[in-house]
Each structure stands twice: as structure tokens, then as C-alpha cells.
Length: 242
Image (cartoon, rainbow, N blue to C red; front, side, top):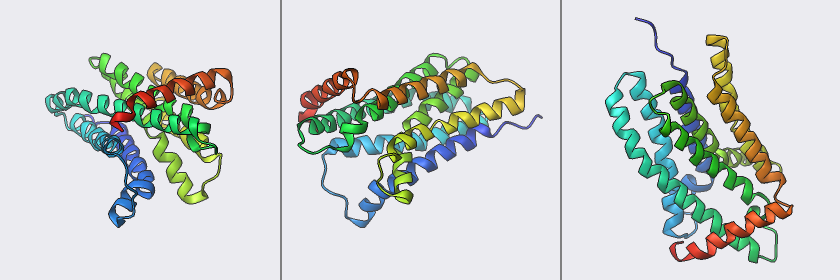
């Protein structure tokens, strides 16, 4: 019997480790130490829904690796509720933070990088939806799922980098863009194995880099201001849930 490819399993494990490591410094560690500040329930739901996703991701890859296809499909449908919760709470948290940034006399993190963080949420939702739509095409499904999950690690990766280099301005954009290295690694794997690159990775890499850069570079422009205003409106409307 031909040995099964372990690339996807190990990549999902790496994505999970990057996520948990990054949030250890700003969430899990302080929670364990009892020093995490009091925040709304929505923030905790947001954090734990992402935590659940990056536990489910390698578990799903392991089920496919061991040919437990029916269990993978069952949990796959359950993941729709989890992904919906992630996107909804993510939009709420970003919106509230953008509203705070809009009313603050001092520049805040979200005033500079809120639209770029929002781009990662859009990419996660978009590529997760594409993976679900193309679930009958295993080659597209698993690659789009990796692309979605890579985009979703942006906040964790720049936190991980901040733990080592400090709170400097370039860490957030570099950390978010660095998540695309997971996609690049998939491209390298495809080429080494098949001497070709699957279109899903090409689409994923181009879309992620383009949207993330746009979210960052357009922030000081009228387009960025309009997006910031729209997100702040979401924050005002959803503040009752925050």
C-alpha cells in the first residue's frame, strides 16, 4: 500500500501550534496566572471559538489521514457552526475596537491596523466557504481549508513575533503577511511531489497577499477611512452584545 502523504497533517499541527503559542502571551498565559483583565463574554467566546477551530483542524486532518472519512464529514458539518461563531464574534470585536479607535484622542492599534486585521477575517470566511463548496473535490477542499486557516492565524503570529522583538510598528503587518509562508510551504510541497502547483494555492496566495496589503496600505486613504467608518458602525450597533 502506498504511504499516505503527511504534509497536510503536519501543516495543520504547525498552524495550531503557531496559534496557541501566539495567544499564550496575551490570553492563555495571563488567564492561567490570573492577571487577564476583565472583558466581556464576547471576547472570551471569540477567543475560545478560534481555540476550538485550531484544535479541530489537525483532528480533521488526522481523520482523513487514517481514512475515517465519515467521521471527518460529520465534524465538517459541525464546523460550520464554529466557523460562523468565529466570524460573527470576530466582526463584533473588530467593530468595537474600531469604534473605540474612532473616538479616541490618541492613536490606537486598530486605528493603524484594524482594516488589515479585518482582511484576515474576510479571507478566513471566504476560503472556508470555498472549501465547503468544493468539499467533493478533495484537492481543492484541503488546500482551501489550509489557506483559510493560515489567514486566520494573523493575530496569533504577530503576537508571537511581538513576544520576541517587542511592540514595534512593523510587527503587525509583517506578522500577518508571514502567515502566507504556510501557503508557500504548500506550494513547495506540491512542486516537489508533482512538479506542478495546484491552482488553489496560487489563488490563495495571490488573494491573501493582495487583500492583506490592501487592508494595510489603504488605511490612511479615503477608501480606508470609509472601511474604518463602516466597521465602527458595526461596533456601535453590536456594542450591546459586547
